[in-house]
Length: 148
Image (cartoon, rainbow, N blue to C red):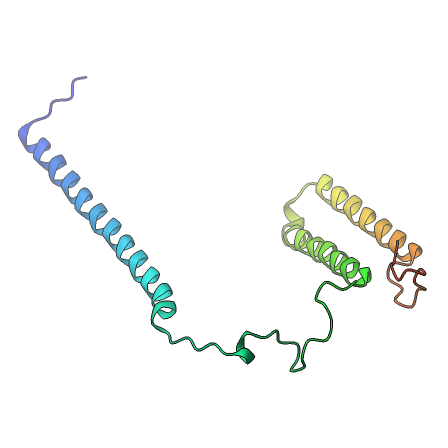
């Protein structure tokens, strides 16, 4: 089977290709124009805004009071542990929502794998509870450092 390109089919494809190039050129130029506009809108306020610096503006702000301690003081580790626990259980919910939406379409292995996942999380939570990580009234060591 031989494909013959006549002058008419050649002109038809040439016309379509030229339209495609013009459309691509318009699209690319639109993206470039939007990029330049967004860049200018982002940078111009920094260049044109007046900046007045004084002692009060450059001083450290601590709830309206003058700073009274060094910023690098010891910090209770319970805050970090609670934040990590929150992230762990928050991610658990993120994993469970899509699973709960399509549970009717999944095989039974999906149910048992999520069940095993929840059992592991429960065991971890019970372990943390038994170790006293969640107890805020726990006695601190003599050096003031909480070791868990």
